[in-house]
Image 1 (cartoon, rainbow, N blue to C red):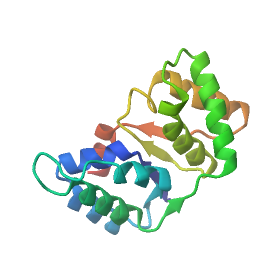
Image 2: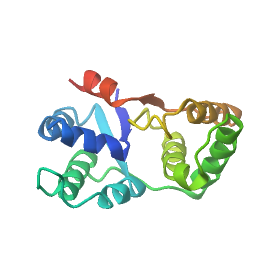
Image 3: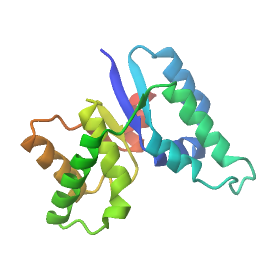
Length: 166
């Protein structure tokens, strides 16, 4: 059985912080038929916007983009117009659930989850408990998806992602 995963942009930074790039790339190569990482233009755009250099004085942006390109290997999902409509429904429900962030702050995450839902992605991995992984947001995803008979991806954090992979 193939497991399809999307890593939120913050996960790539955590992998680099933990110096696990080579191990992650190796795992994706070894398990390429059982584990497929998908990318999205929106995620790559966030990575491109990262600072060029880190405190360690190496090219952080290059490292992030290299890791992204190495694990996604041309498995890319494009945000469709329907995903934009779903993201708006998610946001309306998020606000009803007392979510406090603005549309502008939430939109990238909501688009990722909406397209992941439409593309039947199994797992979305994020470390963003303030927006994408907040309780108000997760309730919104489940509520809207249930109303439209869609399966919500499983959400896991970085720690669980590492435990499952290693």
